[in-house]
Image 1 (cartoon, rainbow, N blue to C red):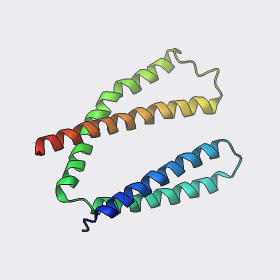
Image 2 (tube, rainbow, N blue to C red):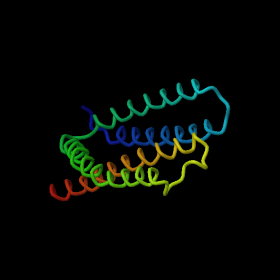
Image 3 (cartoon, helix red, strand yellow):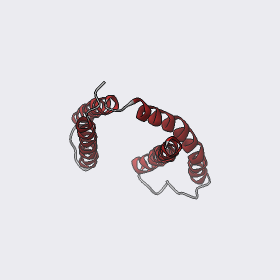
Image 4 (cartoon, rainbow, N blue to C red):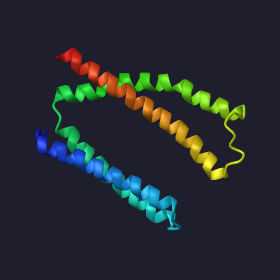
Amino acid sequence: MTHNPRLKWAALVVCFFVGMAMSRLGSIASNTERPAIYISLLMIVATVIILIAALVWWRSLDELAREAHKSAWFWGGSFGVLIVLPVMFGAVEMVRRNALDLKDMPPEVGLLLGISIGVGTAVGGTLSGYLVAWVIFWLRKR
């Protein structure tokens, strides 16, 4: 296990810039007619790079920091998802009752909107809960 702080920050910077590049690539992909296989392959390569950088970052942490992250993901992520479940169910109910009319939208827009609502609320809730639990963990250890 290495505790080199430079490696930790370098790994986080790599994750940030590769993530930004993936976001830009997704934006470009939605506005072009390039074959999806090329874009998919680039996304897979970018994901592998991020996973390697995340592994470097994880190995640079001491045991207390690792426990903080594991505890925050378990407790914060679990409660965060429980909190956003009503939002997801509410969005589904709005579509079911035609309060959110997807009929006038092209089919791909309605599908992407549905996926975005589901994924966005789940990820947003998980991350929000994680951050709260991570702060609580560190405040209790100090």
